[in-house]
Image 1 (spheres, rainbow, N blue to C red):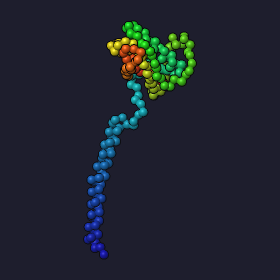
Image 2 (tube, rainbow, N blue to C red):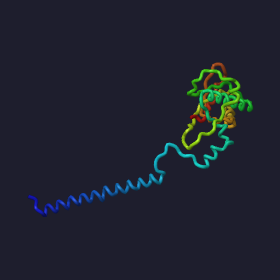
Image 3 (cartoon, helix red, strand yellow):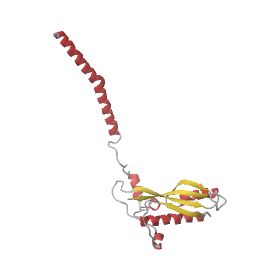
Image 4 (cartoon, one colour):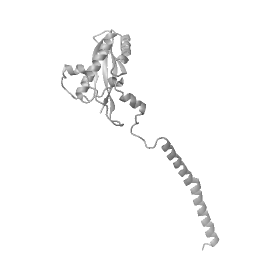
Length: 202
């Protein structure tokens, strides 16, 4: 039989342990959770799937005469892609010839281009049209890209001269690689410049 004094002592021990649990474990954990919640709210709340366009960026993007409109075009469909590819090759070839450089060969890697046809020459000369910008502030357009391999005739010095010509071409081209291959039909190696062209896709 437990005496009243022992019951009181047992109750005090249980109450003390519960108070210790609340003070040393539960309340500090609650304070840490509150602090974390305040940090998340201060950082901007919920995580967004895209960053909204600022007023300054929108002014540049929506300006009718903005340079990017001719450097990064919007392309829809295989016909527009092939016409744009022809434009890039033509303008790059002209820029190289203006610097007394010669492109021995061009090779493109563009996925997905599934068309198997010949486009009218007039359409290729005109190039792709620039559609009006889509309304709204969402990720309605994504940045796509394709790779153009340009074999440069001459020496390694000519290859690096060709590399210096790339920024002068209106379509936006990014150098992404250089390749040298041994060739049995020539004294020196076959040298290739790899360029990436970017465009906007739906």
